[in-house]
Amino acid sequence: MSDPDGDDEWIEHRLALEARFPPEAFKPIANALGKSVVPRSLETLQNWLLHDFDRFRAATGKGPSRAERIKSLEELRDAATTLLASVGVLGLWWGLGLVEATADGQFKATVQRLADAADAEIRCLSRLGRTGRPAKNAAFRELTPELVHIYEHIAQKKAGKPYWLPDSRAYGGEFHRFAVAVWRCLYDHLPEVRNALPKTEGALAKELQAHWPKEDTAAG
Image (cartoon, rainbow, N blue to C red; front, top):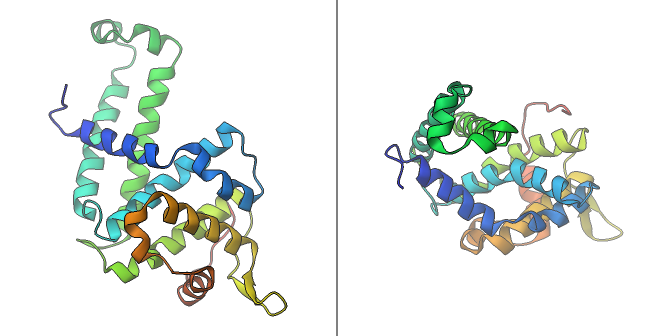
């Protein structure tokens, strides 16, 4: 049944995105970070990166506008918050046929994750400070600071700019390996945004160098 506030549309959008980026798609990124590739680790990476991938897609003009995304996310967050506030009203759960799910906390935890994910994405979208879609050539530049933040949170170390390795005639650096894995993941699983991505690993490194976040970043 369709939700009158349109929250089911956001959930369908999220599920469709997860189908395009299953946990297995994040194995190369986990390897680049030196992290485990067990399902739980891959699901954590999926949760961290999916909303940034979705924003990148929207920034290329291939998805809903920033204002549309914020409105939909606010509706979802508010609906989830209202639902969480009703936990403990046994009659409601009986009426919804969800007693078993709530008995072990799974349903409540799922709704809480939806509310938290929506709220986090609203904050990220709001930081962009735009009322519409940014220019296509700026899409990856807006993704860069988010990749720095995610890397530093997961790796628990400061991200460094890619640097040139004369002997191998290529760019190096731990963050660069992570960024290359993300770049390939986007290229493979979102073919419609390939024109907005740097064309080569070298072009990716130069783009990161040219638009490195000016403010200091800190691990964690």
